[in-house]
Image 1 (cartoon, helix red, strand yellow):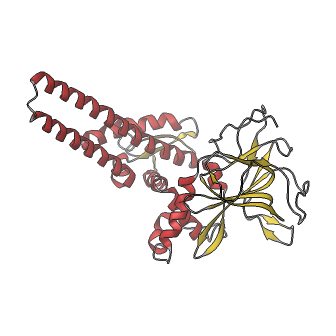
Image 2 (cartoon, rainbow, N blue to C red; image 1 turned 60 degrees about the horizontal axis):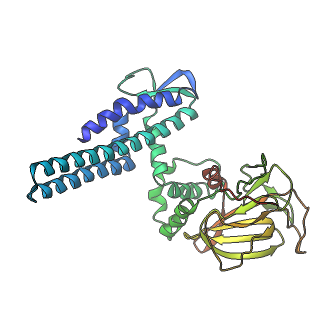
Image 3 (tube, rainbow, N blue to C red; image 1 turned 60 degrees about the vertical axis):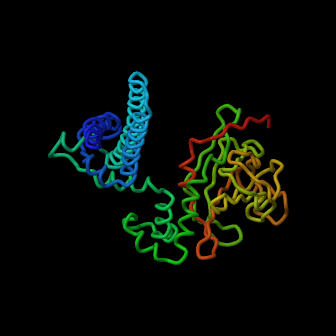
Length: 355
């Protein structure tokens, strides 16, 4: 059975992937993927294949029990047909899941390398670029994105170093460090806790927002310092216009005025990461200690801050400053929110308003 599944995926999956990526790269460049190697070496795909094996065993055991229950031939035949239908639906869904995983990562590698077509290695045995290892690497990263992000932060000294080695090979070195497990748990929690983009969709027509990677750029207010966050800029420079929502479930752990951040809200997510929303124009009736659900409106985008005098506005354009902090070795560390924002960029909750 397992060999049959492998053959089907090998013959069909990557031929479909060829069509998926052919429009985004150079038509003259062809790449191949050894699907059998990918399935043998990917822990995630192996886990899915085990689900299929376990399901087959479960169905077989159930049929064995039914056959010993004294059922009529007609009833037993009905049980067998139902089991075959159940098995077929389950296996097909898992095949599609594996196929989608391989196609997605193959397309990502093809786009990076400007490759027009990706096919199975058996179809094009020679003369093409073999991207099997790159696909496996991306599959490994996608299996545990929180841990991979945490390793990247460590390898890059929290992005102070822009050149890093092979992240996938660094785990054995870092996992020997004190508090490794708690650190990785928080990194995973950042991804697992994320639900929504922090600025809601509104009924304001074409009004929208944009953002770029501005973490650790230079800032000069109160002396030279680095920017510990990402700024989300609105298309309409108007305070109290865009609803700001919590990206995660959590507890409101700070509300009030800060000289740098103006009116701000701090929310600690279930996994322990601290999400900092700053420069708000107003709050949405929240207070410290309140439980928050992902998508709840916590305030409105503004331009408050850069002054000890509470309520100061107009020192900079309206925007939302998002910061994310984790704790490592007992110290609070700012981490780059850009990847988290890209991850939920298309997960905008609707929050209509008459403001």
